[in-house]
Image (cartoon, rainbow, N blue to C red; front, side, top):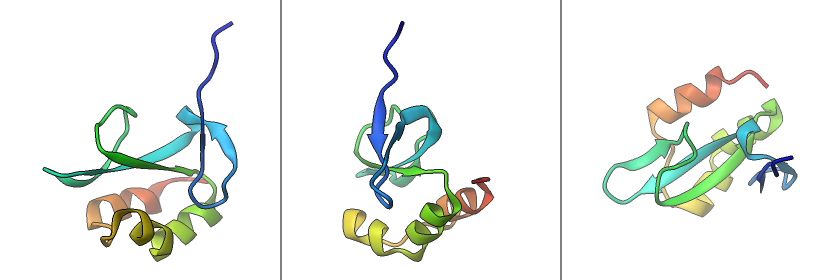
Length: 84
């Protein structure tokens, strides 16, 4: 049986299987990106798909603390589309 990697949600701090999470990456060349393949290089954070966690992340406190920037409109729109 293959081991499933788990990651911690930056908002609720619960351990969740990596594939059930959203990953955002800060890349020096391209800015802040939505990492659908979980493979981009750069500083990344994971958010579980619960509505409460996404809402708190969008408010910006957790995001600005880790990235020091505001969330761009493309990533913000994708987060709002996620069904929790």
